[in-house]
Amino acid sequence: MKILLTGGSGMVGRNILEHSGAKNFQMLSPASKELNLLDAQQVSGYIAERRPEIVIHSAGIVGGIQANIAQPVKFLVENMQMGLNIIMAAHSTGIKKFINLSSSCMYPRNAKNPLSEELILKGELEPTNEGYALAKATSTRLCEYISREDPSYLYKTVIPCNLYGRHDKFDPKHSHMIPSVIKKIADAKREGKQTIDIWGDGLARREFMYAGDLADFIFYAIPRFENMPQNINVGLGHDYTINEYYDAVSNVIGFDGEFIHDLSKPVGMKQKLIDDAKLREFGWKYTTTLEAGIKKTYDYYVNEVGYD
Image 1: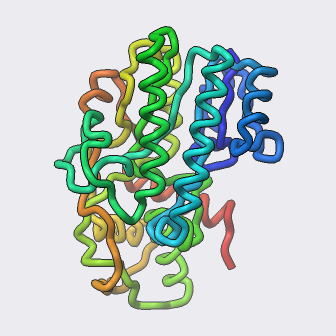
Image 2 (image 1 turned 60 degrees about the vertical axis):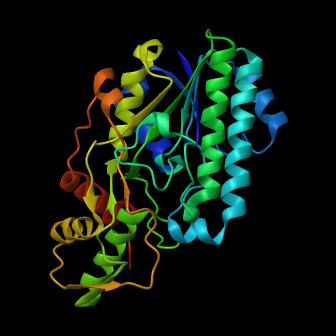
Image 3 (image 1 turned 180 degrees about the horizontal axis):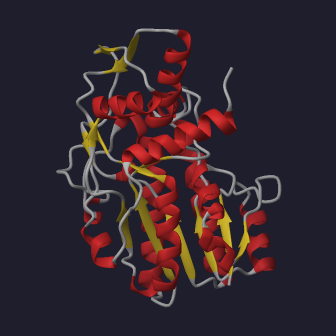
């Protein structure tokens, strides 16, 4: 079976390509030079020529709070254009199976946790990543509409919780929390610092899953795709405070300094925990513990990313 994977050079895409399940398929993962997802005509031509049986859309402009606040236009426009281009190109070419990778960022900011799939577009979005969330909600709805108009088109959306892991970004301006914390604490230990700042009071709760587990879910889902829900959350089903993540990273790295909370900084949503009821019914569960995932990510940072 031939699979077209967008975003093959990103964290999610590279974890999918590294997964043992990938060897059972012919994986197409064109770089942006070969396939510019912002060019609708080029996307349509590529899919029409290669005709994959399944498209997995994992490409996107991603980043943490700082990046989302600084570039809301880019996060909205480019993510929306990529999603619309690849989905409509697959649909017009007659590709029957599409896996759209979305984000729990599109859930309403004040929704009651845990966040169920039915809450999409049921309330105001979190302002710090609203552009990204709008783009993801649009692609999710488009997949629903296509499947509703013609049920033979299985265009479904996977909604992961926050992710981290191998091939993550460790630049504080563009990275998510865990890789940013790994770099911050690793640098502090190396430089002999005794204090590290935490944005806010550290009591906000987040759910982070190791990216290799999401790749495992993808290859679990493919042979069971007809039975997978239209929209499905994929995560742990439990969360931790920001302070607990800092503690876990400190334990892995061996940092014994002090944390200082900067209450002037934004913290985003107070909690973002997915409801994993449909995931459990589908029969899949993560396998990587927080400590094991942080260790694998830290080892990747030290041995493959490298730092001075």
